Amino acid sequence: MNDVSVHTLSEDQQRTLESIGEILRGTGVDISAAKIVPPQNKGGGVAAVLGKAGSGKTLLLARLYQGLKAAGLDIVGGDYEARRRREQRTLAILAPTNKAASVLRMRGVPATTIHRILYTPVYDPEYEKIAEWLMGNGDRPEIEELTEVAMDRAAAFYKQHSSIPGALAAAGLRGSDFITGWKRREEPLDIGFVDESSMLDKRQFDDLREIFSTLVLFGDPAQLAPVGQSGEMVFDELPDGKKFVLHRIHRQDQSNPILDLAHALSKDDLGFQDFERLVEDASRKDDRVVLSGRVEAALMARSPVLVWRNATRIRLIHAFRAAYDAPDDHLLPGEPLICDGLELPLKHRKKRLDLEARGLIKGAQVVYLGPGRRRGFSRLHVVGAPEPQLSAASIVKIEMPGEEEPFIPYAAHMGATFLHGAAATIHKAQGSQWRDVQVFAPDLYAAAQSGRVEAGIPLWKRLAYVAITRAEERLHWVTRYRLGKPTTSLGVDDLARPATLALEQAEDC
Image 1 (cartoon, rainbow, N blue to C red):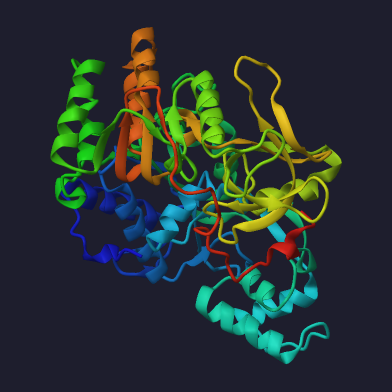
Image 2: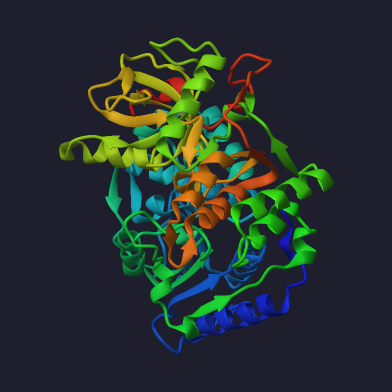
């Protein structure tokens, strides 16, 4: 966990902090004095903090969170929500994907997904008493189904992790025991911070504006806009007085060569070959940039190769499976998947909400752990979810080169649908980061040759910017259609099994 308080803010960060602070003060929250004050208006509307990678958006978000927490705001997450007093002020910090939310949580910011704010769980009244007790809002209840030892286990877990579902699971309960359903949020919230807001589509944006009276978007205007929005992002429509721009801070990113390459893409006269020479130069000076003549299959198991074209993605997936001797008719434990949505009829709305709340939303990264106990079920690890391991009815589709219909090794009648995740399009990768990222350069060259432009910027530059900024520690720039075979077999030993939920307890999803 990073201590953001040790960083000195740059001039534009400080200026933006003061501007957002002024908006919040108008709503009745003074972060400089860490107190609630009489409001001057009902809400602050929508504002945006914009900047490219390395500009300090996350640091500023964390500072604002600390200030609001110190002022006494109730932090609302995707967990159980206690009964609130009418005058109690609230803050929620959101991200479009599990992985983006988990990146913030690793930095000490209690983020959750947008879905977990739009929909709230309905708890069984008996177990709601336990939740209120754990949060310090009531006396220790007596529950016939739970022993004193189980209650002590729940208390010890909550003290360490501050998770109500996790504490109840530690007591031996399944999610279906204490969560009886899901409902659309009825009560509004005060302040919402949304990270990775360049991924928001108009419908999500409208949903959030219905819930929050004050909404602050944090986004990177250099990324790719959501599909179907003609290159526009939701913050583009805001007036200039509501948009605050941050610039790159070299002293905080410690001359990161990956960010150097990302920012070089803003030069108007930079061509693709010029950029590849910059990558080559960086690779000679710093091992955080690797110029590679082949894709490494071992890295694909946990971070997808990033490509532009679907045909390339499908070919690389089959090369990965062949490298691991994966059979045609089933998956190996450890194979990566990407959730492609839920195939459930309207009458199964509760089941849909439950699966989405557990992290199975479109675009979620998942690792296959093995078959479930029931036919058509798969045991899964949802990357970035607070309780990542579950078992769900699954429809796994493996697309075939040159064929319209995919091969389906696993198929429940209905449930969560998955595509293979050893390779992914750069569009799908937005909002995620991995320690090592392989970017398939021949695809970006093809984008450059196409001459396509998006929002006034050559498409290949937008693709390259998004792809290389997905790398947290090391960028692998792959130049050829070759695959390096793994030296070890595929497995799941690297995935820590949480104490919050046993796999066999989740077979009802």
